[in-house]
Length: 235
Ligand SMILES: [Zn+2]
Image (cartoon, rainbow, N blue to C red; front, side, top):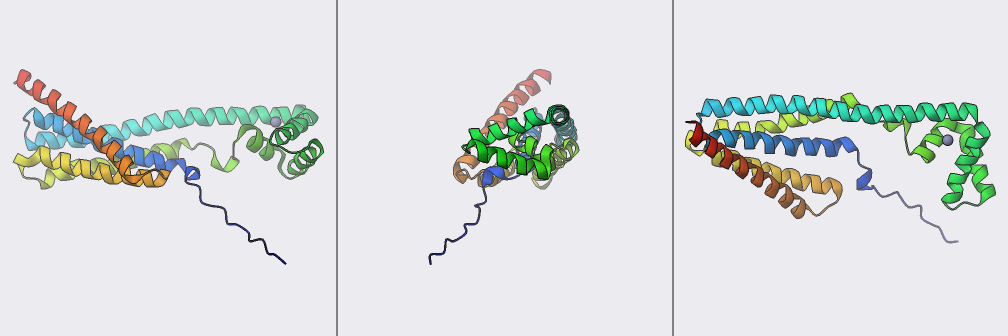
């Protein structure tokens, strides 16, 4: 007798939780914006304490703005999910037969025969009617609805943690090497984060690291030039 091996489901990377990707994005953002801010101020020939204050202010402002931005956008998503759930509950209460047919039709479209589709719809509805409709009609899982506070907290903490990279670089570097130290350490961390992000998404590591490093260098270069120009014109 042939034994058919039961295959373990592969771990699909795209299924990995959204919050991890949000955290990586927040960290990239923190390094690029804080380092650029500090380099801009440094290029205007400011003193080390002034550059430090700019960095810390950038950390605080960036974390707050990430928290507020994430909270607002994820709350909007949550509201629309909630509205969908309430609408579905009303429809299920008002027109149960029509809703059952609708669920069966979804399975027909996915390739089941009509009678089998109806049987599946009936059995799934008997176990968890609302859950089946949300999952197969609206692609919502009750357990994984959007979480505004979690999103806000995660993006703020990841921003604050990674904004310390350019600040630490400034603190350990001799004053004359402020700009090179901040840029080199920041770009190295960006490359590492880029590779990690690529690993999470299953993308080629080198390409992911290169993309974020080039983006970061451009941001720092542009702010440095503007800082220099402003520094010359103001003083
Ligand atoms: Zn429905």
